[in-house]
Image 1 (cartoon, helix red, strand yellow):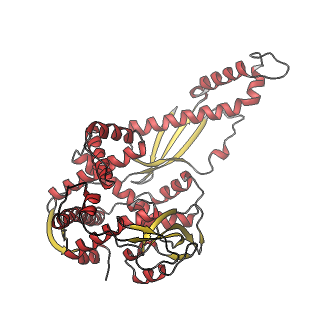
Image 2: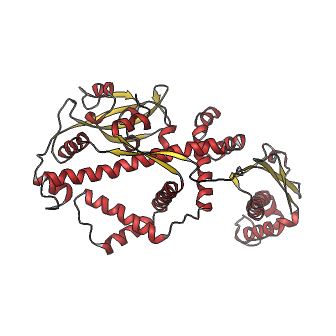
Image 3: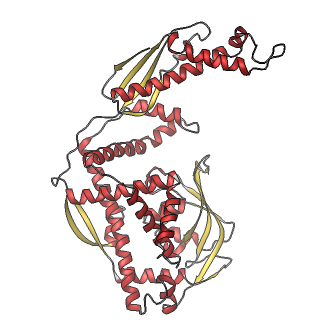
Length: 451
């Protein structure tokens, strides 16, 4: 076997693998022998089928399978040995395998296109300056939150027709050219009409009955990206790639008669006798809102840092290769037009992933398993507290956290959260931050381009 690399440019290369019969024959012979021992062929005793017949029956398929195994292992080993920082996976040169005579060839040459990650240096220091917004909680914000809590813990009724104080339960369905998009987003969720930030959409959602259908841009439901993502059942990072309209089918209308602001409400929200006066109640709510606004402020800071680093580094990618790789590895067939439509967002996410990986390595950012368990316990505590359940059994919390982390997807997401938190801490301690006090209304205008 002989493996060589031809560098096309800084982002593209071709790996060539030359195989002789000796590289795969031993494995093929073993496969054929195993087949011969197990094959049941009329006229022959089991294990006594002539090898010539076995080769005619499965010889080519066995050779192709074993050659592919050798190629896969050899490619990965070569990439590791040469320390190639590849993007995606190597792709066979188009149409080349069609020229192979599998029946008669003994020696083969295979060529693979490879996309390479851009090489770059990253200098982070206080020379980079960013605005860090300190969002003030207003009395109006507190009043609105208490109003929401009163509704949340109020009595539920189900009117036939919706009005501005009602909640709609229904199903979002992603559209394309006015029709349901094949493989698109489908998610059932609640829309609180009064919380909808777009006034024209608020009016559109009143006067509806169960079974009514309306079409609208779900991003108009809320100025908070996290709310829109929850409504559609997607991650916040996926929102920028969603440009289509959605159909919303009303399934049920809920009206809540608000609860009174008294001890009964305090106990339901924070636990029995944890809060004993409206003043304490308002103070606790202000504290919670402040924490939530820090999340919004950090998200804006991270976005600004991303844009600055994108601009500063101006990373290039092997675009043609990546588009071909997306088409080749997508679970469902995609058209070139679909790839082009989504590629800008994909490439931006990939570039940020490369930058993040560089930062994690350069600043030696690590997340340990005990940290992950403790963080998961914190998430569980918040979830239990929101349901009014006890959170003081540490042993039970630890066991539950470990069960959650047995789910690879859940564990991956929690690791990513912790890496993100540690990276933000590093950003705040490294860059020069200009703190600016601001109201939420003014912050929303800046963060969400509102006028």
